[in-house]
Amino acid sequence: MAETLLAVRGLSKRFGGLLASDRIDLDVVRGETHAIIGPNGAGKTTLIGQLAGDLRPDAGAIRFAGRDITRFDAPLRSRLGLARSFQITSIFRDFSALDNVALAVQAHRGGNFRFWRPARDERALREPARVVLESVGLGARAGVLAAHLAHGEQRQLEIAMALATEPRLLLLDEPVAGMGLDESQQMVRFLGALKRRITIVLVEHDMDVVFSLADRISVMVYGRIIATGTPPEVRSNAEVRRAYLGEDATP
Amino acid sequence: MAISRRTIVLGVAGLLLALVPPIAALTNQPFYVDLFRRMMIFAIAAVSLDLILGYGGMVSFGHAAYLGIGAYAVGIPAFHGIDNGFLQWSLAIVASALTALVMGAISLRTSGVYFIMITLAFAQMLYYLGISLETYGGDNGMRLAARSKFGGPIDLDQPMVFYYVVLAILVLFLVLGGRLVESRFGMVIRAAKSNEPRARAIGFSPFRYKLTAFVIAGGAGGLAGALLANQTEYLTPEFMHWTRSGEIMFMVILGGMGTLVGPVIGAVVLLLLEDVLSALTAHWQIILGPLLVLVVLFAKRGLFGLLLGAASRDG
Figure 1 (tube, each protein chain N blue to C red):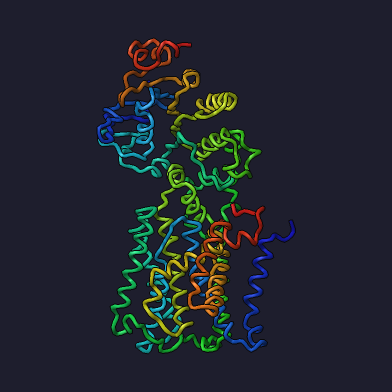
Figure 2: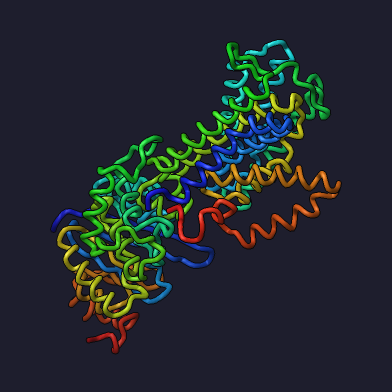
């Protein structure tokens, strides 16, 4: 089997009486797109939060690219190559689209203690940002204030920011949430092209999106991963069907 | 567009400030040199607060602490016969910056109301420390023994010279501040203000940059305090009172947060209103209060925003 990029062992997180993560084991192999599915409240976002470093697990360990990152905070994980998108679109609304991406470039280039030169004149930040912005199809919208972008464009911008950090692993929390059909299909096409270049962990409710992108799927129910496998394996798993997919989810 | 509205506003404002002393001399109203110098000193304090409030989203309610520290950094050495301005003003900047370092290192670990309360508490602590300094006048304060001495043509006892020294410092600070907020460093603190979780997710650790900005603002506030002591030739713990912090914050909001120039306009307008209204009635704050409420309600981007017009926006 190929090299494991992200290894989660025994990850547990409790909120009061709710066990949101219950001894989760998860391996993400370099190059794969690994979807995490499950009903609402299964603990998917809590898991993403712990992977990204926003939440501290109560127990367990996370290894990323051979390092134990369990105690690393979110900025440090990002600088190590772990990028994310948020379930609710999270961008710098009062900056232009290009500014947003240039900030992500800057975050990984360093030099944040430079006080004199205008950052918007720095080719070293603007050029890579422009390339990434064009790659997600927002090239023509570079100068637009992020708040004024359409919802779908804002989601694309968020992914552009993640990509600008040149990540080794991309955590996507419901990338097509709230999108119309056209926007959603466009995003799936984009991610389909992207998945050849980068390892992706994808949390998504839309089963069409999951089954068209995922190489492997892990199914979460009540904070536990009850099954992991290829899409056909998961589709035919009796426990998964009972717990989650239901009859109507079968295409 | 050839010349932006912003450039015109800045040019006119700068020219007006530079022309105050000759006009005051011509009209035989030396009082205005004093008043506008006071305005510019508060403008420096307000601009320094704007750096962290308007650009960094740090609602510091203790900014007057630096005014007091800066003033005492001039007053105490002067009391002991040390009147070297370079020494006094350096001390004012360094002591304020160190205070900001301590205050920021603690308060920046919190946010929202807690941040406001901790900065307020720090400033009040220093206010009471000032009151307890019996040697230096306690709560009555003390006269400044002599204005800071720099030698050569820079003689602060000459009202005009002092005026242009303050104007030069204000302009220099605006230029430096303008560079800072557009630099990589400035982009980090602005990004953290705009959306801190996102800033962290792309790899910024905002704390150290916010703390640095906090320290820079503190140092500049201390310099304003050193100027203020020379202006009033008197220093009292009142410089550090929380109402003074509120006043500086109001200058920033009135003029326009996150614009640097706005706080200068805010300082000028607020002190002008105080001057005009207090001549009318002893209860001038009853008039000032509602006026300020109206500005906050109807000019969200402050007076500078009104001057720039609806179309332009600081991105």
